[in-house]
Length: 234
Image 1 (spheres, rainbow, N blue to C red):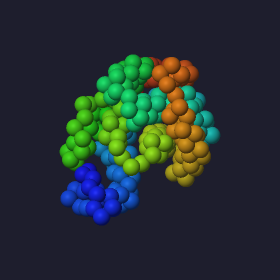
Image 2: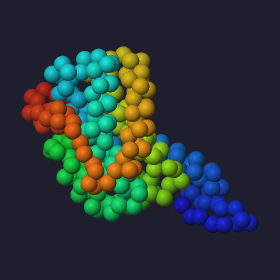
Image 3: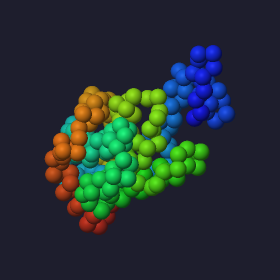
């Protein structure tokens, strides 16, 4: 976007169209929503974040157990890590450092593949749309770089990212358990307060205060690599 000031009114040019700051803010929100939409070609549907193993073991069998597992993932597991990485990039941390941190925190080969492959797909698509040229990296780091400078609050960006992350796992459970569509959407809606709280919390976290304790989920991610028959890549 190109920003100019005319007659004390700030205007922005986006794709050849001049608009007010308020209009540009709405466009930023629409761009972010598009990036985090299920239709954006990341291949997210192919990943379950180890949920497939948990469902196969019988630990997640219905809406209540799914909600518990997703809540844990958001509060102390991979969702928390992704949110923290995204928050760090949005608030000015070095993207290369965060890309290396993302790989170190992935834990397993499949977890890293899930994060990196989706990030690389995100970078390719954003660039093809005329967006920022970003080095391929883990998804939260890539989204953070692309969203820097948007007129959208960091907490809102993180919340929408976590909503997309959670919705993809709900979709996996709807297909695998199986759950009804209404049950899946109810689980997602009940997790909205968890998502909002985590988005706010990670903005206060630092390298020294970041902790995770989703040991069962991490073990499931490692065990998933040895599943002989599976529907998902992770």
